Image (cartoon, rainbow, N blue to C red; front, side, top):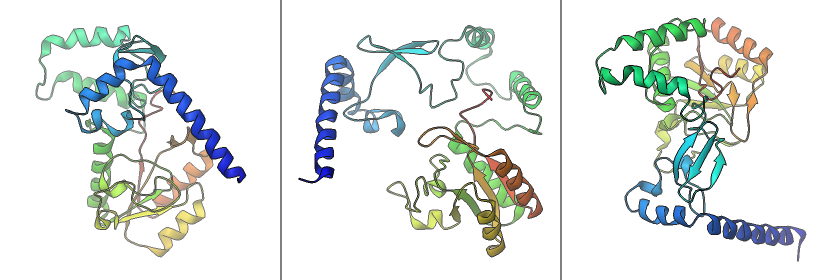
Length: 261
């Protein structure tokens, strides 16, 4: 028997033990999964919330901790995939919600929307204007569309390993290949997406030299796939200079670090 086979057997045995321990601690989550998959696609509200053998189902959170239906408490490192940077039920957030609860559920152009945009401009001096959207995927879609409209060009450059949400045109190059990463995405959807190596400014320059139809470059400055990998500051500055010289829009797709850095 080869060493690879032995290692594979050890991993399989370890996985079985982990699954068994998990099942013993979470019987109510297992039952909740059996019920929810009859009503929800995949039994969850989003693909990132599923993991085998079945996902956890939570009841509440407080601060940095959250509790599942079996009463197990966890340190919540997910935090709504990053944006919940103040944790659950932060008193200042709850106080703000109570302040505006009498305004109505959805009202047209509320004054506090303008106040929030003004605050963001003060906190992020580079932000000249603000547009609020419902998700990162929708923000990326709109940014790419605006870049194409502004430049009159069609293609968007993205980097291997960078994730930009669920719009079809960006479901490619999540790893180290240009394979489409989801079923149901036609080749035509990624025809104008150019995937290149990250952190090499000469690769970017060569791509620009060879293609004059590039509207934008999009990147995750703090790439989180497989960990948190911040881009080199020198590379970011060089990329900003090069895109400005070529009149190509530079899009930062960043929803995780927020105001932590």
